[in-house]
Image (cartoon, rainbow, N blue to C red; front, side):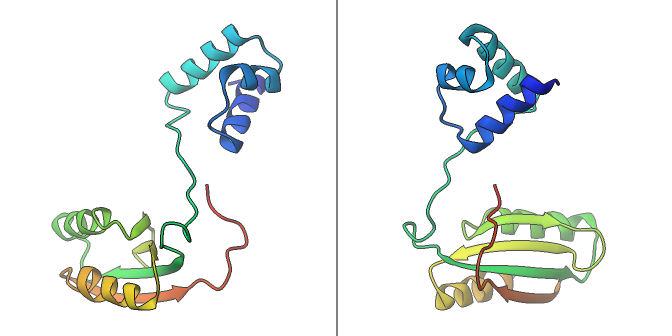
Length: 146
């Protein structure tokens, strides 16, 4: 990967909807070589996909909660079941398994506090072998994730 590849990646991270013509102009290439580089980056698994960044207020999901979650056991069956259940929940926008304590970091987006309480009570607390859940309520997003 060279400087031009990194420039292509940076431009696509800023705006994944760039046309090949616009992208080529921004990185100083002609359209053919630019397209080949993008296709190679996709084929090599560097560019994993493209997505829309959606306004959570417009979608009725502006209440964000960060969860620290610990399981009672780390056996494969417990971990797999837990991960399957939370992965399937539309309220979960990010799920990370961590080294150390807690076992998981979960980012949840819902409409409001009652919706979060319902999610926690009906989705999370019904999963067997959960030892501890700590909720952190977001005051302000200073730098959003990608």
